[in-house]
Image (spheres, rainbow, N blue to C red):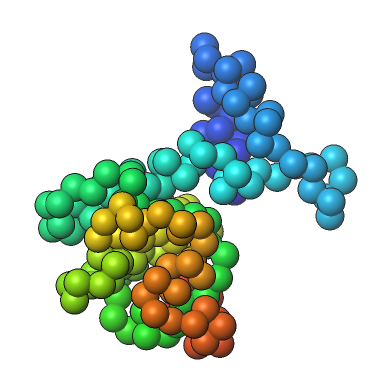
Length: 172
């Protein structure tokens, strides 16, 4: 991440709209308790990040053949905060746009369940995100975390957590 900061981010802050970009960053910076004088960004707290993630998931979904073009009211996304059961990775297809930029796993469900597809997307080899596309906007309502997705699909989130011990190994 330091390389991205020194190159792309630093360069973008020197552009004509650099001060606007700094003002946009300031509200989402949090002091790092373990690194005095340093700050962290928590992307899940910025609705623009979540909206961008939803667009990425919708775009990948269309790229892989689903021409239903769901609106954001049917798409949920978040920063990774849990485990995926090994069965997900056994069923999921692995792809990448450019492995240094984004790689991802996804599985599509065709059995008329509330979740149409489930996605794990990793950006820049480190930032893990998770998302889902729902059959209807009604199914999407009330989904705030991955545990909510599991419940909607009929799984106990505690069982999924115990089954997902291999998540980090599967993502390299």
